[in-house]
Image (cartoon, rainbow, N blue to C red; front, side):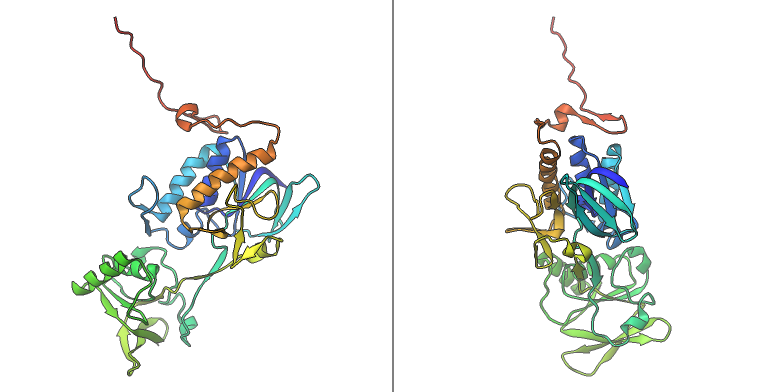
Length: 351
């Protein structure tokens, strides 16, 4: 059985940063994630997508953010159970928890922090009769590596941020990019809509609205899509790849059966104090939780993780008083014997 102070369910950015904040409090962490590598959606879905709202990084690729977080927590020696899903939880008489995965791996922890992002998720697929026949044969629901589309003809369908962002990004990669949306209005950021319009006016992107893709053309792989615009007769657009970006359908999975208070597929928490759930000792941080005013942003998850760790420390050591020290003053001592600290000021005596 794996034993730890804090068991973190979900190894996305929020889960990874929790290791750092816990480490400052001398608390050890172990992480469970159903994906085969740390990073959550940042690694699995859009590792090459730039993120613009991480403090101190004007722009950073999602995959690079994961790498930086892993580098930051290395000295705290976290454990990982990857490729396994947290299935059951049992509260013990001493108020600790045993969490068992779908593969039977047992974890014993004093505190459980659910940082599962959106939970398990599946792409929302358009109602195209033969689309399943072309999955991985030119139909992709997620863009993992933009270079895969280098010098290829690409058709993207959707009206949200992902469809807009990837249409913009791929204009510098693909041979051609066509964006199709069933409405003239888009749901994405206004600056992204303006950028798409600029690229269209410059002839770098083809925009077809209001229109829908009704069929896939091809035999062994995609060679085109059948499009209907304004209810008129369908026409074919030649393409190598069709990428419908209609978002993800999130599911909490087995966690939904743990007796936690759920609201709209998210876990309700006490945001006035420490992001604890209705079960003492179980916290929920990041995109998986909900409370009044909740924003599903990575930087908000970092904040929630910080306060959660302070509460976890008090729960694990109720008789100890913790005095917070700034890392610039106290430095950072890793469990591996390493130490990071600011250079000491040099005082020069004036004669």
